[in-house]
Amino acid sequence: MIHAIRVHEHGGPEKLTWDELPKPNPKPGEVLIRQHAVGLNYIDVYFRTGLYKAPSMPVTIGMEGAGVVEAVGEAVTDFRPGDRVAYAGALGAYAEYRCAPAEKLVKIPDGIDFTQAAAMMLQGMTAQFLVKRTYPVKRGDTILVHAAAGGVGSILVQWAKHLGATVIGVVSTPEKADLVKGLGADHALLTSEAIPARVKEITGGAMLPVVYDSVGKDTFLTSLDCLRPFGLMISYGNASGPVTTDLGVLAAKGSLYVTRPTLNTYTAKREDLVATANDLFGVVKSGAVKIAVNQTFPLKDAAEAHRALESRRTTGSTVLIP
Image 1 (tube, one colour):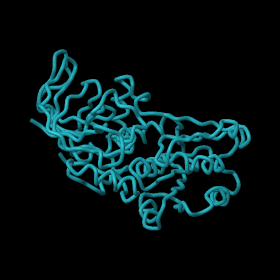
Image 2 (spheres, helix red, strand yellow; image 1 turned 60 degrees about the horizontal axis):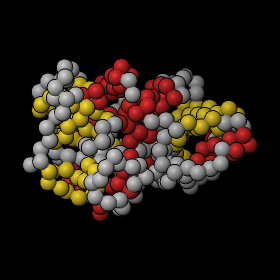
Image 3 (cartoon, helix red, strand yellow; image 1 turned 90 degrees about the vertical axis):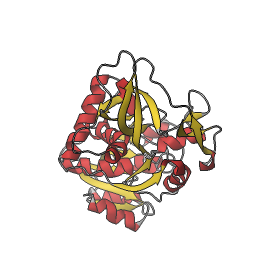
Image 4 (cartoon, helix red, strand yellow; image 1 turned 60 degrees about the vertical axis):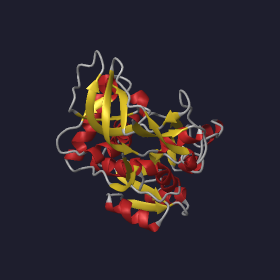
């Protein structure tokens, strides 16, 4: 028998239950993983609350983890027992053992441990496509990152600086401002400030080509007001709730663009997944991007981890240990 965190009905963190289940067996195309670390992400909250619908209930939530291959199903040729693997985008991570599609896995290179791997896969690959593909950040750009002290935000700050951008990070506390400056942000603004006015000051009135926003409803209009005409608003999360703004506002504010990208789309092809992961591993191994695992919780205490995440008590990445 194994243990897993499951949701039987939608609601708050108290709806996360520590259930005993039979140890799974891999089906054709699957791999059985003995998990060493599980990543905590805001998408886990969305599945817990029902904002994102699970295929069935009860559901083992979690999208990201790292561990060792224990067994492989039929037709799996790229992995064998003993391989160190990590993944993102495969629902069911909050478990001591889990089966996952082999096509979702990548091998962990030497020099990266399980905790790092579990902390970086979803957040780091998200940051990769955001700065390399959704809007290719180039030297001389000035960009803005909301929730800059968070998991994806802290990676975005470092990676954009590595690419030569001037980075404005927005955070909720002076302590987080110090943290993002330590990551290389050129400017750290507080959410209590008049953000568009500060951006206008920083850019000499030019405003921004792009804003990276994972907060959602509370910051959407503020983000639009930071953009120059034809600027791109990248809305990649809903921490404060889903955006419901009428699209007519885009015309009024300068023929702006908005996109709502997802990691699943950008890594739907196996070759894109491998390339994205390898780019991430490379920039981490080079030291240009550091993965800060600032909180760990036992997997059985996932409810407390969710409370910390939702109350903005976390910085960097959080990992659950089975």
